Each structure stands twice: as structure tokens, then as C-alpha cells.
Image (cartoon, rainbow, N blue to C red; front, top):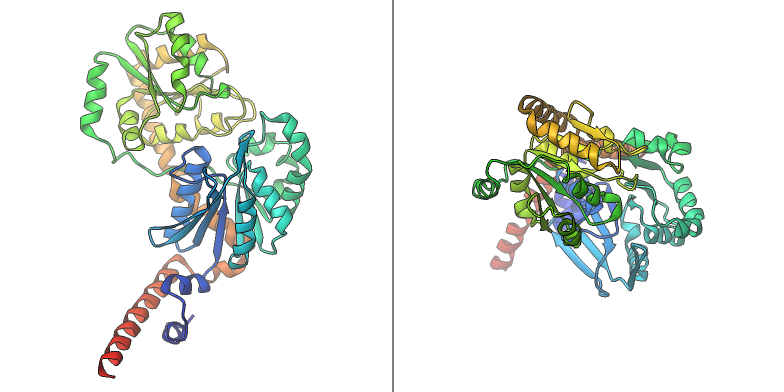
Length: 431
């Protein structure tokens, strides 16, 4: 668009600057279960992706469920909108929200594409009912593994959604090929690994020193995750029966305190400390303070293991389980970024922990490789750029402007808006 046209557009429009920019560029709405400050693996990915898209010139908003019954609308950084639709209840990890369907129906005409984060049966239902004409992209974070009875009822709608989709994002080749839903539809699948924001510079030296002082002369193994059975925390706890006494295991995450009776029963209080939910502003310091990171998840419900990537960004070697059909063992390369052990095997976990704790040379070598792998393949910026490439492949109009051209047009629009505003004020004063 010629910059000279910006003046007439702004002058003849009652829309504000943000609305005008949105009228010119492609608009995407991300449809998720929740959104920060409600945190989880999918919520973190959605947040990093939406923030990154807006920073790279793609207009991306969010529609999700609210934990309460009322609907709330937030404007984030004066840049994008988050609509949190009121929820009636949560059943089998699924938010029941008729208001989400209503909100999507009301706003869908504003967008060129919907980016749906799955699994999310409520979002699937909304798309089926509304039948939007725009592009539909599926971000396949995981198959539905646990709720098998519900899946039998839900399967026809999920199959319909896959057929309707213009593109599907899988987080690893291994997971896509092992999914009975994705494997037959690989022609639609783009492999886009989950990347994270580098927070290695957001460390509190004081807190790191405090953590290390508390466990002086001990190697620190950190594990972060929920108390869900598939996370395999009980196997990590049982592994501590066989770990050396100069090793301490720190386990953080919501509901993790429920394992305290097991720890007491096994007499392992001196080897394990449960941290509960670690505040986001402190998490970086715990990553920095540890020597090894462990993800003991045992089932394919752990499709990727984002915490592995976070730990790798802090140059930490990883110990995780070689789960068949999961992307966990793609993220953590055996004997390179860390060690892989058989799932549900406390002895194998203990052997790996003891080996890395005792071998400083091997541990440091793996730490360096982990950081290099993060920088080369697993940053949030790389995830965002690959997502934009997928959008452009099926929406040719998106390729019209480069990131630099988009920035120039936005600056031009901003300058025109400021100039017109000044002229309007001067005209008002003289009249």
C-alpha cells in the first residue's frame, strides 16, 4: 500500500490506529483452552507464539475459556486482544463453555484464519457448529490418550476437524508418525518443534547462591511437572533409594506435595525436597542452580516435554525416558544432550543420575551440546518464523509484505495519525 494513502485512510476513518493496521494485514485468532496467567504447557506455547507473531508483524488475537463464569476481554500491551469466555464447568479436562461458541461466532468475520490448539473438544465443537469460511489450522500438542471412553464419542467430530483443516502443526516427526490421527494426514502436517524464550539472563544471582548454599557439596537434580500419573514422579522418588548420598532431588510443580507420604514411607526426606509450584520469576534461578534436569514421564501423554527445552536453554544435561511414539526422546538426544532410560524403571533412572553426577567431563559436554541444540533448533523465534511460513504457504496474500515492509507501513500509519491529530487540534484552536 502506498504510504501516501495512509493519510486519507486515517482521515476518513473512525477507527483507531490499531484497528486500521488490522484492516490492512492478515488477522489470526488463536483458539485455546486457557491463556496466561493460567499456566500449563499448551498455554505457555500459545503465549510465546501469539506474542512472537504480533512482534513479527502478524496480527494475532486469542479466544479461550475463563476459569470463572463471566466473560472478560483484555488488551495486552495495546497490541492484541484476549477474549476469555465464561465457563460453566470443567469435565474430563474439557472446559464446557457455550459462551466460547457465542464469542467465536460474533468475531470470526474479522479474521482470515483460526489457529486451534488441541486437544480441545470445546473448540472442535465450536468450529463444527459455526462452519467458518476462513482458513483453519490445528496445533496438535497431543493425542487424547487418557480419556478413552470420551474419545469414542468425540472421534467423529475430531475426524471431521482434521478433514476440514487447511494445515496441521505437529511438534515432532516421531509423534506425528505414531499418531493414528496424524499419520494418515501427513500431507497436511508441518513439523514445527516447540521453542521457548531464552530466560537464561533472567537469573537472580542471590537466589542461585542461596539454593546452592542450602545443598552445599551436593549435586542438584531438578524436576518440574504436575502430579499426574503419566509424569512418572513416583518412579523418580523410588529411584532415590539407589542414588548416591551426595545427590539431592528437587521436585517442583502443582500438587507435587501429594507425594510427601511416599517419601516419608521410603525414608527419603534427606534426599528429596518438594518445592510445590515455583513462582515464574524464580524458576529461571532454579534451572541455573541445578546440575542435572530430570523428566521422568512414562507415557505418550508427554508428547514433547517443554521443560526439557527450558532446561537446555540453561545449559543443563537432561535425563528422560525413551517413550515409544513420543517427541520426548527427539528433544533429548541420547548420549548428546543427555541420557534416555526405559520408562517406569527406578533403577535405570538412578544409574543415569549417578553416572552424570559423578562424571564432570561428560556432564559439561552434554550441557554444552544441550545449549547449542537449543540455539540452533528450539528457540521461540524459530517456532514463530516457521509458523508464519506455514501461514504464508496457504495464504499467498500474507507473502505480500516482508517483516521490514510491514514495520515501515505501521510506522508510516503511526506518523500520519500523529500528524493528522496535530493538524486537527490546530484547526480546532483557530476556529
